[in-house]
Length: 521
Image (cartoon, rainbow, N blue to C red; front, side, top):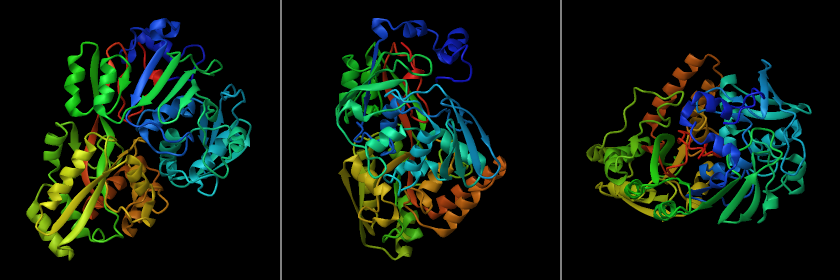
């Protein structure tokens, strides 16, 4: 990552001398800007359907926007943020933190970054009455507001533990040009447009070409405050079919693609110029059951749905073992994960007994799922539905839709029961359990799909615990409570599978971020 700590030696130079992360080879060539390192093409599984950087909460979109609207901090999942655009910060002891911004940061339109820009963006993210409602509020649940102290100092107000606030603003804080955004109408509505001019961040790359739903071309920003990015041009496109993404990799049309399906892994490996790179991510795949809609208002019925699904079999057969079974909302490796909880076992007889106990025997339900967003998502959902349908006392079908339909059902919260049962994924990118727990189980969480006063109160209490060990234990207890209440069918932790040209030096991250500044050729 780009490092703002020491202007006399940047991180890429440090890597050159230390060999860290295996990036020595080719670094000098990257900085030299030779013809063979000028451009990197990245093929996503979903192209951004918005130009507004806060109008989404989707990993593929962040991969594009983070190069334009850069994060304020350098981050590693679960670790304390490191300075980047924010040079330093200090907690004042009264539920506030003062962030000191660098004074040499420019937007792509030439204006200087100020504290007002950061405060404006934060308000757009967390206040539904300021601009437009943003689902990114789920990642900033403890952050209450922002105040300008001076031109380069902004104060974030938060409720709860200071460490929780750092997990959140360290991962989700971005910045837009307030004056420019107001000219785009951002105080009352989403930013829209179909040209390169509707993007304006401080990132190492600026947009030079934009074809909606097709391609976005970025070039290195000449006045970027940090070190020179490793490639002159970045091109992002998308193909929602794994076979299409892999074909583009084979022919050299793309340098990196994500979400390679298990059945396409062999094709990538057989090509002498391409490689599979994989990591078990923090993305949890599950099926929410909105509990104010029948029959999901019954805990016995929700537990039955978990017993009805052969999760191990799905991982082994449908995912070719690319995945790990989940026992709780929080992934292994995230602060608050409870190692003592086992996944629900496959037990159809117990499932049928619990359905009878729930009073919903004979009910008909439908599982709605996307296709092409997650690994074999449609096949996983159809298998889940078929296994539930095999119960003697439940009829279950499946419906495959565009990802946007499922995303909208998730973001609608508890006010929309048109689609109460669906498959979705959620990456706990902050490295702290609160990001998933608060978002899905608390009022105003941003993507609430389960309403339960006991669970909500326990999460709220954990948010105020300053002692790290005490807070971790509280989060583990909440995960145990959530497993018992069964707000979801707990499926699996997704394996991130990337196809990469062999010459690209890059290792995948557990938080699924794809950043050019971590690459070389």
